[in-house]
Image (cartoon, rainbow, N blue to C red; front, top):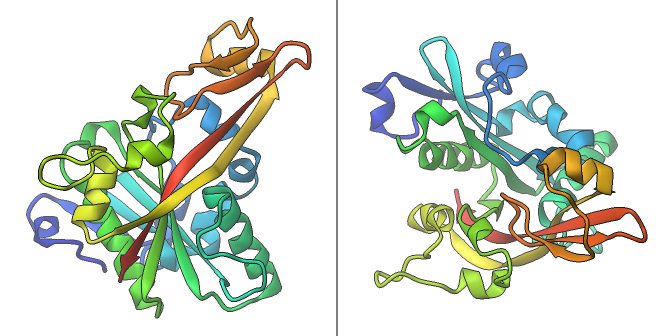
Length: 256
């Protein structure tokens, strides 16, 4: 069992890997999350994300409060030694997820682990669970013999400034030297090193009708459309009847 910090013993929250509690694998998505609707329509996520817990239970963690699942942390390993593979690819989240399942099918030994998701039930936000799950993911990677945990981080406040380039946003610091962004700050406080931007970490494309259904917005003009929850504007093309969202993330490296 992973004890991410001493509070686990006093507040009723228990954090374990899914390998330790495989009966929880079917339950990791039973609570509602706050991800924007359009994120679920990334084709890579649609193809693979629902299989991560089953494929890599030793790299996934779950938090329970009594008999309720209240948070999850998902990671996946891949082989970073292959030619043409940068451990920190420009395509970030999409790329490492695809590599992980390709390598699993080819039975390749993994050399790198990347975090994919940390999600906390709305009722348990503000209790430090995100940082505890991050610590648990690092511990899980270390238990499998890996020296680092990588993370294509989705800065939580970036959606408030979608037109600011991610490279500029990442450089912002508070007077104490920590990142202005709350989620990047959690990673840095935990010992993470901000390495670089992943400029095309996730891509979502769809017809204008699909984007209208996902967002409730009219998508009735060409060009950049601000969408709630999107880190950058969505690019709308009326003549081609489609819109495309390319999300940048930030690569962070943690020692295990």
